[in-house]
Image (cartoon, rainbow, N blue to C red; front, side):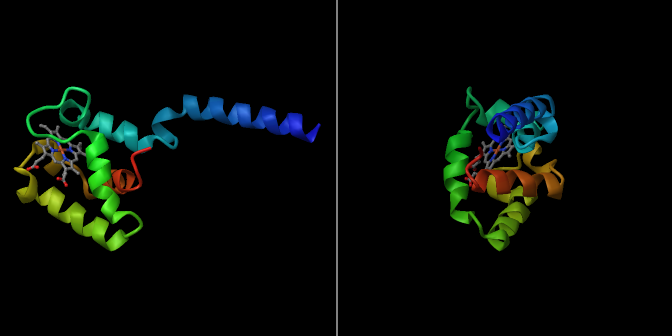
Length: 108
Ligand code: HEC
């Protein structure tokens, strides 16, 4: 009985997550989508833009290291490091933080 109830709750939870997609666990993926990140880093790579997989691999160096992630966010938003890409510099510091953290954790 308990087991069945648990299954029902899990099921409802999955449904809720699907409905609340932009607010759920995948908020960062949605943010990346909203910010146009995929237009260069997505399936059709633009110029020398690395794929999201590649970005996640690189940023994995900062996994669990909030200070290093913050330093990266600052450099990234300043734009100098990465050839002044509008989409990079336009990000608010909170969005950049969320995206860098998400990438550092593997972009799941
Ligand atoms: C107009 C194309 C374009 C868009 C849009 C874009 N990027 Fe980039 N991005 C690039 C290019 C090109 C580079 C590599 C620049 C270099 O290596 O000098 C880069 C580099 C990066 C890097 C650094 C990778 C490294 O070498 O450490 C990160 C992180 C990144 N992008 C994340 C994002 C995120 C998150 C978004 C969405 C807000 C985004 N980018 C949107 C083109 C783009």
